[in-house]
Structure formats: C-alpha cells, structure tokens
Length: 243
Length: 350
Image 1 (cartoon, helix red, strand yellow):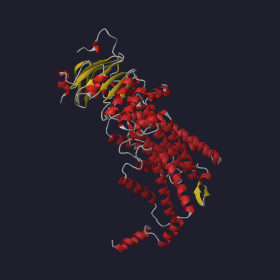
Image 2: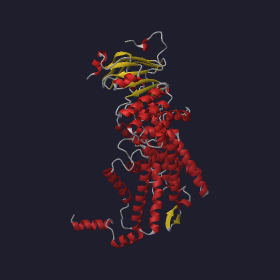
Image 3: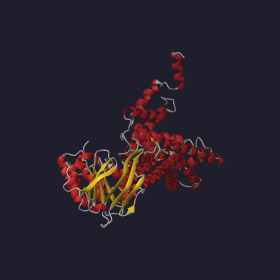
Image 4: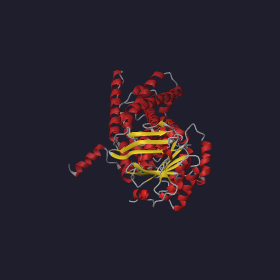
C-alpha cells in the first residue's frame, strides 16, 4: 500500500508526526507514531479501542504533549507549544463525547469558538447555513440539545474557528443511523474547505469518508494507504480490527 | 448539675425567653414597619456579603481554587480604603464629598488589588495548579495569615489599634449615612440604603462582564471545560490571571464597604471573619455560581437582619445569634442540598 504523504516530490504535508511517543503517567500509549496529512485530504485513523487513536489527536493539539518525537504543522515544529497556540495556528477539534459548554446557549457555543479578531457575523452565517437546525435552537442551552444536534454543534464549533485542519473524534458514536447520515453529510460538506483527520470505529463509514487511512495497533502505525477498495475483510485489516 | 440548676443557669444567661417578650415580639414581627426594617436592612447586609463573596465564587468557578486568602484581601481593602479616606477627608469635608471620595477610593483600591491579585496568581498560585487542592488551600491560607500578621505589625507600628476596629477610618463615614431614616414606617440606617445601591451596581457590573463581553463568555465556558476552551485557541491561563485579579479586587472593594459598616470596621480580624461569611454565602449558593451567590447573599443578609432584630427585642440575650443562625443555615443546606442552591455536582456549569 502506498502512502502519498511520504512522497518526496510532492508538496510539504500540512501535518506531519515523526516518531511520536506519548505517555499517560507511566503508561506508554503512543510508541513512535509516524504519519502525514496533505492539504485537502480526509485521513482516517482506525484501530481497536485503546490503540492510541484519540491520544494521537491529543498529541497533535499538545493536550497530552509527546515526550519524544515531533509534530509539524505547515512545516513548523509545534511540539511543546501550548494548546491554545497550536489551536490558534488553525487546528480545530471535534472531541469524543462532543464536550459542549452545556450551560451556554448554542449561539454562545459558536461565538466562543471565533477569535476576537475574526469576522464573527460571516462565520456565524456560514455555519448556520450549514446547520439550519442549530439556528432554530440558537437560544437554547446546549445541554438541552439531542445527541445529534450536539454533534452538529461540535462540528459547527470547529468549523466556525476557520480552521485548516479538523481533528474529528468518533463523530458517529452513540447516534441513531439516521442522525449518522446527517453528520456524515455535514462532514462531507465541511471537507470541501478543510483537511480532516477522522477517528472512527465504524470501519465502512471511515472508509467511505476518507481518502487515506492509518491503522494503529499498540501505539504504532501498522498499515496505511488509500481507502479505495479496502474492506474490513481484507486480511491485513481484519487481523488488527478483530478482537 | 441538676435539671433545675441547668434551667436556672440558662435563664440567668438570658437564653431562656421571657413569655411576654415573645408574645410582644411575635405581634411586632408581622407589623409592616418591622417587616420593612428586616427586609431593607437585610438587603443592605446582603449587598455587602455579595460584594465580598462574588470574587471567591468567580475564582472557584473558573479555576477550581478555594482561595483561603480571600478574607485577607478584604482586610487589605478595608485598610487601604481607610488610609486613603483618612488622607482625603477632614472634619470640614461635606457628606457628598465624602461619598464621592469613597467611590473614588473604592475604584482605586479595586484597581490596585486587582493588580496585586494578578501578580499573586502568576507568582504563587500558577506553579501549583497541577498539584492536589490541598496545596492550594495551604498556600492561600498561609498567604492570608502572612497578610494578617503583616497588617497587625504595620498598623501597630503606625499607632493604629489592629483590633477590634480602626475607629479613625470608620469615622470618615458622613453623618448622613449614620442617620436613621423613616422608610415604610421603619427606621433604617442610611448606610444600608447606600450599600443596597452599591450592591446592585456591583452585581450589575459583574453580570454584564460575564454575560455581555467576549472575555466573560470565555470565563463562563472555561468554568465548564477549561481544556476545551484551550483547544479553541483561547489562553485559559491568561483568563485565570484576570479572574484571580478580579476576585481579589472585588474582595478588597467589599473590604472598603466593611470599613464603613457599623457592625464590622477595619480590623485584622476581617481576614477570618470576612472569609467565613464569604464561604457561607458561596457554599449556600453553590460554589462557582453567580446566581447562587446573589440568592445566598440575600438569604444570609435577611437571616442576619432578622436575628439582629430578634436580639434587639430582648427575647434572646445571646449576641452571637446572627452568626449561629447563618452557620445553621449552612449546615442545613449542606445536608439537604450539598451542591448548594444553584450548584451542580461538578465545578462549573453556571
């Protein structure tokens, strides 16, 4: 399987991880992760529970800073920077379990995501066009939204930040199939303007959305390549995804 | 001690109520002038308690820090306000000028103590965010004790009595605020009406800051999930510094009001006394809740006013009745609703 991100002749990748080792206390979670993401791509991180997918996203944002290795964004080393500086470079996060500000209204959740020097009105219009449901509930406290609406808001919050790269963690988790379709549609529309790293347990969904994938196991990348034609029955995939 | 001896001792101590006095007090309690007095004085006291406590709740709401130096900041505010008022006011200064000086002094003390609080946050509190809450409690309690003893040394060296109160500063209050006015048939001290106006102004300013500014929005979001706020590109540490500074400044403004309050006055004892009242208010209201602090301040203020009235009727001769009542309220709330009136199970959510 080829890896376009590794191409020596192509443009510099938007994001690059090199030998990233990340720990939670003494627990060695990422054990030398290497990956790269080019501008405009959707890249899926797949693997069983606990192999380090979410930790990879947290390491990129320096929420859990790597102890070894390098994270480069637009060619610049961001390892060790504060999270707000890394996010300020244009990296948005749609976390697992959405993490709404439950006591803020929908509108306030959107507003808090736009920097003081950005054109809030324009960005607000953009996301409310994308998610008309959210505009209807803009005065409602986020904790009172349904799971699907909260997921939409989480995506809207990342999009309104005018980010170049979105880190999307388990967007379909806990949602009804009909709502998952809406979320997928929203992600597909968002991907027209934004590069994306997608962590997703739902393998067919991940392969459907993504251009490329990285398969993680025990904190390292064990397989990678284009998603086209890849199925869960593929032997190289199956042995890492099956329990 | 036999039962009779105990009863006699209780009667002699004045705890046992006199039946005619009780009947008289009950009949007076429901008179409009009594109700008006309890409510208006209660709201005046509530205003002071709110100003003292709101900074504590802001700091806990965003940062999760229980600031045990909060009372010491109120004490410093009372002394700083006292020094400035004594310098600004002479015997010939009129009542309007005194009130105008007071407002300017409160603003100066607020600015000064906000800066002091910001420096303390950066220099002392920030290095221990990653440690357990016990470190924060010990550190801030230690800071409070150092400030209290520092104030005791400084006041003694200047010939000012550190306790019970610095009467020179308290005496800068204009006569108009010490005068009793008739409102709805009740006789109300002018200071309490002044305190109500100030309390409403401070509450409105804090509310507007939290709800009508972008920075206030960051603080409300940060009180729910600081990590998520950081991941949105907002420097939460800077917000911590701002909020700790504001909390310190608000405590100090509360201290400036306590300087004129007839039941308090500038004293090193404010370190502990103001801290206790602030804690009672924020715990009853729900730690970190602005609304809760407002509601609890009103409850505590009116309870204080009611028990002070009760004491003045002569039914109860125990002078500590207001304090006992307020702490009893705290105990009841902790048993019935441990998270407080508007609190949630975890930090934030307000």
